[in-house]
Image (cartoon, rainbow, N blue to C red; front, side):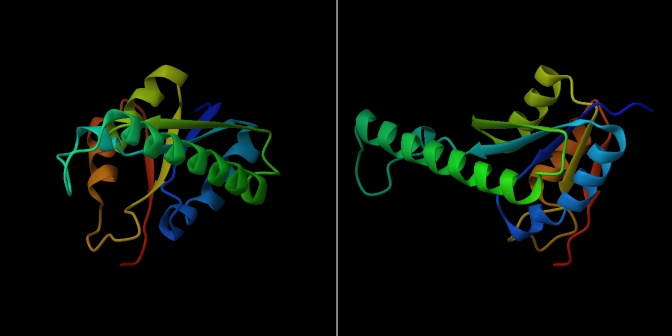
Length: 147
């Protein structure tokens, strides 16, 4: 099996971070690229919370979320992925599972390594992980996280 591209989706949680030793080990062994993905929830599709927001307010919130995510991705990559040959950062807006599956196809990723669930997971598998495992055309390695 040849592994030239590994996808590590992160929500910046401690749970997601537990997958990093596996990601770095694989990439060092195979000299593979790491594709790091963070997905921003699209708040524009939600019903109003306390009244209606105009589009400019939603745009400002989404712009802030993207800048914040970009900064966090940079920090994570510098802190944990310095010893890796190549890492590529991606930020998407939408449903996390759908965006992970889209990136697999777009970047021709060979393998996904992700935590079994996010920070608030009380079950063996989180909903995002379950959707990715069930729908991925490539191997998905899930790192178990104690609830």
